Length: 117
Image (cartoon, rainbow, N blue to C red; front, top):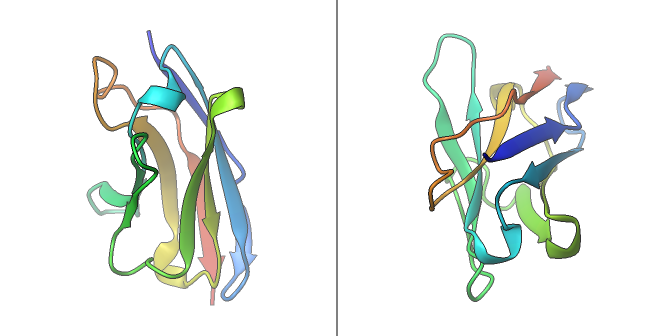
């Protein structure tokens, strides 16, 4: 069964940076499209970024493009989300997940990111 353990969240001021990590087990990151989602208080969970295992392409939601960068370390079966120039509207719980395959419906506990103005 897949497991996703997110870490690296915290409380930062607007303009600062954070790097989130997601250690994955039960899913082979080297051959799986991986993504990050977030959920702000009172709002639905939303897509943030995706990394495609074939070809290395990435996609981002418009509001984070140019500020966030998704990457992976296949040897460590780990996915990262580098977040720069953070804004208060980036506040939320961040989750990583497999974007395809039999574990695509599995979610971890997430990591809280809070950006103060």
